[in-house]
Length: 100
View 1 (cartoon, helix red, strand yellow):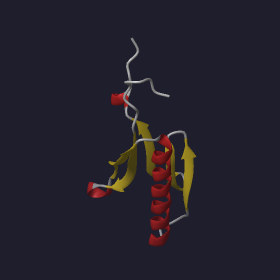
View 2 (view 1 turned 90 degrees about the vertical axis):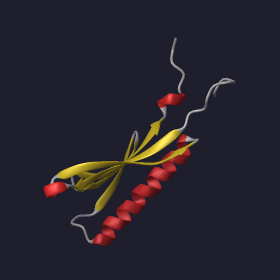
View 3 (view 1 turned 30 degrees about the horizontal axis):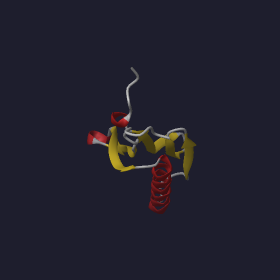
View 4 (view 1 turned 180 degrees about the vertical axis):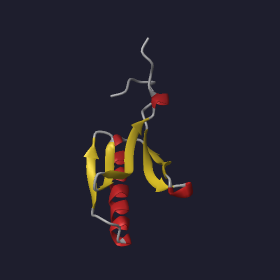
């Protein structure tokens, strides 16, 4: 529980995606998907987004079946050994008190 006067933490969901860039070179894109007041809400949103991305991959007819892997920081979406999307929950450090 936070002490009176402390700023509560917020949690941000980031999506890291593997994409094809210029000249068909693999590249990574990072997207901020929103901030949440509770870690539970952030993980719920990350899981929903992982499920949606998995469904979209299945519908596209991509080679292989996507698998959602729970991690300490969120969810990875993999096609075989390749992680194609990562949905990470990050506690915003700007809201944390520094130790003195």
